[in-house]
Length: 257
Image (tube, rainbow, N blue to C red; front, top):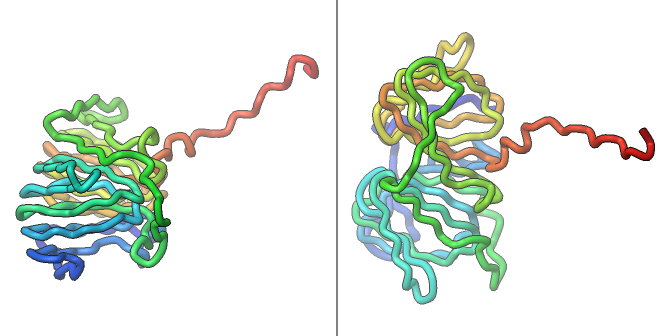
């Protein structure tokens, strides 16, 4: 099992994405097959470019700055413009164009080896439409598993629309949540300060601020804390709650009791 990893936004190094037909697309890959067996993740900056692709991955993304634009549908007639805090979900087989105006976007994809495997079959259609979750429309509910302060969540990508990765935004303010991940997870801070404690006796502290990214492999014991912290979480698998429930034996038929 790999260990928890912390990527500071200020330390990220970007390289030109050669698939951009014009303009600029700068990419910083953070998590790939060398680290994860499930999730591929990074940060990209789109500015004045247009990247046409039929995706061979499921993807969820959150906008960190600028205007992120996706063109999809017949003749690319559907135009989605996403601003800071907006979340995008799309599935394998989606035909689209990535565009942006100085758009900084955090993305997570499944499978992790999408760039070398999992080709789209001719005529294959995506399982669902492209979803655009606007930050202004998100509704949060209070968490009940915290100690002190306040914590809340807004579930966005659920098993109802995804068969691979999920997506949730959570807030932590003066709270402390003990947890052990039952999934692989990549996350990015969206505001305030998100503190994640791991290691022996929770001695390792990661104070994540806007744009900082944290990788947590399955089985990581931790504490979530924060000071007006808000974070975008992407777990794999999306149905980890169902998988973690114990299997209950079926009752004996009445005829054999």
